[in-house]
Length: 194
Image 1: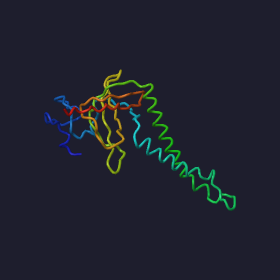
Image 2: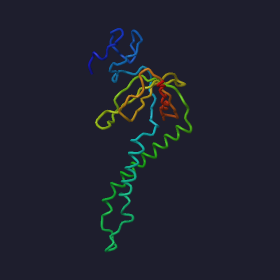
Image 3: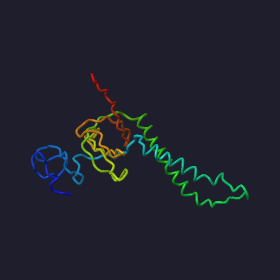
Image 4: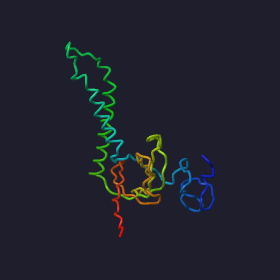
């Protein structure tokens, strides 16, 4: 990590955390991934429904589940005995079962947050690369500052995609239940062309 990225753009002091200890300005644009956070963090699990955790996993669940269950009903018509070894289908059944667990868990989190969650507001503090890649591009994690009963805390909200849709220093609305969070999408404003 280059040292020039760890200098406050406002006063030139070396950064020791995400907020400059000399002038109090945030380290916007600086590479702060290795710096200690200004506030404690809350364990955050994304409770939104996305293409990757519902549709994509659902396709794997259905397709691999069907192939994995084939030995239960496919028999050789000519001899009346099973022609294919059952062990061949076990990996397909396991992948189908794993994908089903992903879909069910995603729906469970979404339902919990929707039914029992409460709405809060957070401030987007910045973005970091996720450990997961999407089509050879790093996924993004949104660092959000929220107010809790114990004071200000950070959550690292995995966006499960490569976009950075929320402006830094902008407000986002979240639904939260325990450590499950879901960003509430703002309705698109219609443009008045006349």
